[in-house]
Length: 203
Ligand SMILES: Cc1cc2nc3c(=O)[nH]c(=O)nc-3n(C[C@H](O)[C@H](O)[C@H](O)COP(=O)(O)O)c2cc1C
Image (cartoon, rainbow, N blue to C red; front, top):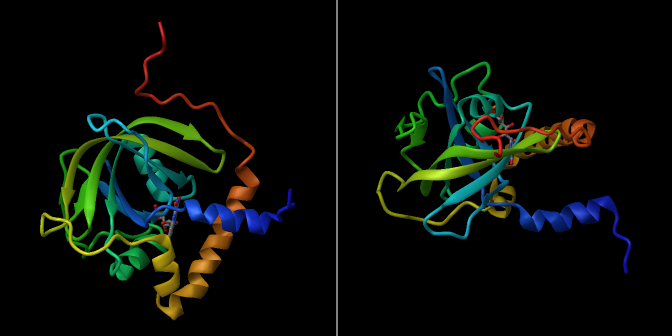
């Protein structure tokens, strides 16, 4: 069996990266949006649609979602580079990143972006602590397409984003990735038993 170096393992694992999604959240009148590429379908039951996504604890969105138990996950079209730059390269702690991004409140009160491939409004059903991030399992309670109300275009994949982002963003993207990796390296072994507040104790 070949012995793989950590970088080779990481490159293999990159095959499991998800499409690039925009995650919006809201708590006490504060709204926010971020970008993730760690979202997966988390149910095979058509009548119980679920998604999950890993969000680092240093992100403002993490606290908004953890404390409100709600988020909206948007699949994006493969031409939505500007939105990814706006939501995924800086934090919403200091400024309202959704100002100027057309959106409306969804059924859960969380912003739904008008321009996207599709959106899934989610109520958190459970969480898993990874030390550096939380995996949020969401029950999908409402779904819609973008402004045209039908799927149009092609979904933005992580490979497409990495290969085609404007050259002047690449240095910043790689620096942010390295910083997130350093943060995660320090905390990944410190996994806490977290019981999601919405769960009933067995009995
Ligand atoms: C392509 C791409 C993928 C990303 N994937 C994730 C992810 O899966 N999980 C995560 O926590 N952050 C991810 N990020 C980083 C966040 O979007 C970024 O830290 C953002 O500024 C967080 O904003 P906030 O602090 O306003 O929540 C990604 C960023 C980009 C550009």
